Image 1: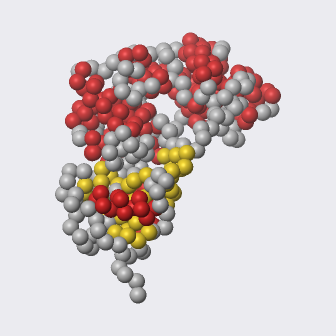
Image 2 (image 1 turned 45 degrees about the vertical axis):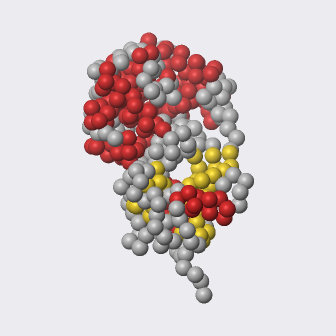
Image 3 (image 1 turned 60 degrees about the vertical axis):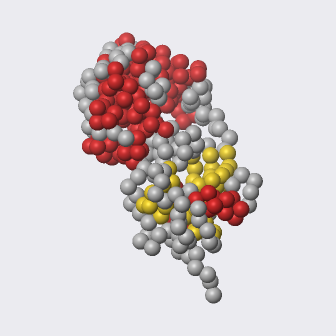
Length: 355
């Protein structure tokens, strides 16, 4: 990569980059950088920005996040999904606070829980002047098109080529700004579909553009097989509109979040699985099926069949630590978007005997 190309890229970035609240002058405070980078994993930036701003209001520094209970952190994360990221972020920040200082190199940062090659390189580069490139899907896509590489997104060969490409940019224009510039280019101009090539500062040397087929680079990432699951759910409404939620056990999908009692139906009939769930919850009386809802978690496609139960019988677990009566429209605990889907499905279902 020539100095002229790198300079053109940085000039373009300075004139066209999006104004984002986490985009402060270099070197940056590592705490907000880490929070924003973890949030941005598998989440679009238009959802990240308001969530980041809310999170920083609640936990303005590493000490406040480290001192917070996990439930408060997960509640603040609500709406972003992939809650495992929040737990790992919480654990990593606690480790930093316990150590009394931030790791400064990519290798040191990578030892923190949940920090992979990209996140550790981003924090090192943007906060401590590291020269290891943060390589995300945007950098890979720009690399594949500029160099004309017929490689798959997220493949080892393309990741290594993107790392070398970004290092060449840094050598031609040292500093973290050039890393941010190539990521911004991929996010806003060299997009997956309909790239705006006339606006691209790297267009004069782009091999894919020269061939007239920029949209064919890189090849799509191989898709993971979809896994279908069937769950049952127990919806326990109270006269005041609250429903009984249970904290999902660790080591399972949606772990740590608060939802109505759930169970994988497996090979059982929905009614039988729901009755077992009711017995476990200490609920007797009729169960009425509500319309099923669909929910996806990464490659898992889940059908959840809710059963509405009467709360007329005493609840054996309602005062236990992992159970709580909550307003399903505005719960005071960390939950999932699945709760809103279940609320809509169960809204008009009654357990009263029908004439």
